[in-house]
Image 1 (cartoon, rainbow, N blue to C red):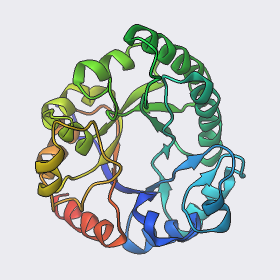
Image 2: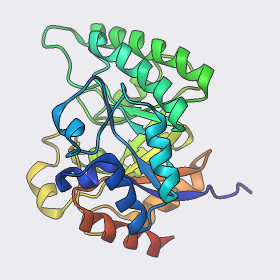
Image 3: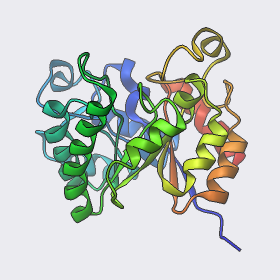
Image 4: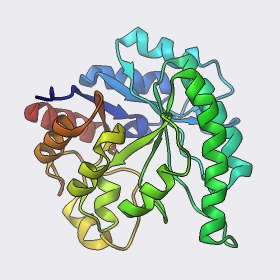
Length: 278
């Protein structure tokens, strides 16, 4: 009989987006709330808010050990890095994703999460998939050698359906390509998140635990392909007990549920709800 997989709870650092604090403050707040894992967001180059200490994102021009030290100091682990970049635009995504893989390897993050991003206005569907294949091949070559996995997320025009996400995931045959399933994005795209999760469970490497409020569901379901953050887990439309059962029964490796919500208060309630089901 297959042994149920270990499931842990983490938090995407977007929960402190509106707190106007730096990365280290956000990690300490996640630990204070009781989270076991965090999912930092990284960016290329420099930007004002992060440099001034008013935003949680970390530049990949910084020392990767900055992330590791902050997590070790407060006793949390890293589930992955939020490294979303438009795979259809290789002039942006190739070097960004390759640097993200190197950064992840040094800071101790096992997964780098991305999606295909907004497409160029002038390319065809076939051209877009060729461009994505080029980007993912370049990233996979670095990731394979470092034990890092690229987690592909349903979020944009091609990954909004199960078949579309599968097509992207199969562009490059590599053990360094997996799935970062987003419960909220899949629901908002008009899909059945439970059937879709079961479909990708054997390839799942990370999960964005995103709930969708009834109000947002009524206004946007079937009209959008995703959303930055959701409401507190347990306050919306997602059946978390059912999600947990699917992951425990069908996944091949331990999975972190990385909560994606918009406030510290929502993060606190999300953790309480998910723990009650575990």
